[in-house]
Image 1 (spheres, rainbow, N blue to C red):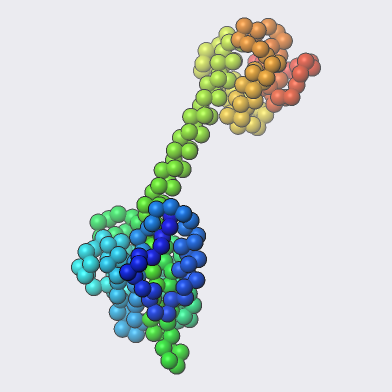
Image 2 (image 1 turned 60 degrees about the vertical axis):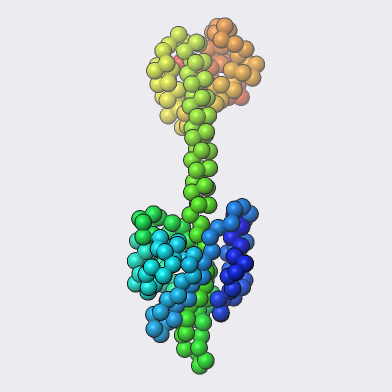
Length: 246
């Protein structure tokens, strides 16, 4: 996502450009994300938001008067204390900072924001203001979550597929039903301390690698081969079996 600044937005006074540049570089390529500016005067607790920051918080521009209390009230409860500490640290030391946190906007929607900001010192070293940018990463995070969910579903489907294939091998070789086949697979998984999915993969691979050439070849040698595969000896060839199936 390329969170490039809008062309009509100037950098706030006192923000070190690399602080924002590093944040935007970390986001990577992709669709532009909303970027807004903010400033808070430490002495008076007076905030200024650009229109984009109002919109990130679910308000029309100028609809509310931003204050520290309002800002923190919209932070996600699990992130509120950390953000308050970061703002206080920036105001106290003038050090730049960048982080990510969640907010709950005026409509109740949870959003993910990145912030890059810096404290600004007055002449004499007193705390003056904290100025910086918010970047709304909500859409990017939702897209990433959808991609992750899709990948998980596909992985689960693949796992179920190989387990179903392994069950089919056992049903054919030992004339058992699907429930008994899965129970056998599960029991041997516990015996050899190998996940069911991995044991199923080894069994299916052993069937198709030429050692067992088809469902019609379910003679004693084939059954012994399956037995060894279930016991984790997936590299076994024609050696004597180490045990028999229950």
